[in-house]
Image (tube, rainbow, N blue to C red; front, side, top):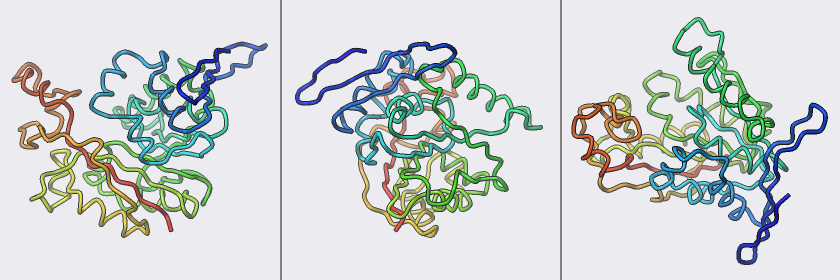
Length: 279
C-alpha cells in the first residue's frame, strides 16, 4: 500500500495482490470525493491515449459537478470503449458499486456482437481495475432493465443520446434510468450540443448533435427535474456544420486527412453537461 499527502487530503491507493486465486482490484480511497476523483483521473492505470482526451472531456470537473461519491451505486449507460469506466471503476471499487450496460456478445447482429465482445474483453483483460464492475446485458428496446427499482444513486451517460434518438428508443432508456434510481438519485448527462437555432432533435441526431432544450424536455417528460447545467465541456470553437457531422472532429476524425489540422485545432465537440434529479 502507498500513502501520499496532498494538501489536507490523505490518499490511499490500493495495489493489486494475489491471495490464492483471489484478485483484489485497484481501489481509490480518500477523505473527500474530489480527492478520490482526482486521484483516479491521474492514475497510471489509465493509458496515455485516454489521458490525452482529458483536456477536452474534463473528467474530474464533470464527475464533481454530478456529485459522484465513492460509496454510491452508479450505472454507466452505453460505456462505449470504457473511457469513463476506467475512471469510475477504481473510485467505486471499495465502498460503492459500478454497473455498466453492454450488449449480448452472442447477438445475431455481427457489429453488435463484436462491440460487446470488445468491451467484455477490456474488462476481463484488466481485473486489477475492473474485477468488481458488474455488467447489465441489454437489448433495447425490449430489454433495458438496469437493476432492481430504486437501487442506484446515480446514472451517467456520456455522448450517447443522439444514438438513442436515431434508434427510436430514447424514451424507454430514460424510463429505465428513472426506475433504477432511488428518490433523490441523479441522472448525469453529457451530450454533443447543437446550435441554439436548431430545434428538431430527431433530424439533428443524424449529425450527432442534440438541441439542449429538446434533451431537457424529453428527460423531464420521463419524470426527472433539471437541477443544474454546467459549461465545463463547452467548446466555442466548434462550428457544428461539418459534412461528416460531429464525427468530423477528434477523436473520430472521420474525414481522415482532409483538413485534419483544422479539426485538431478545434478539438472535441461543444457539449452540454446537465444534472437531473429523480424527485
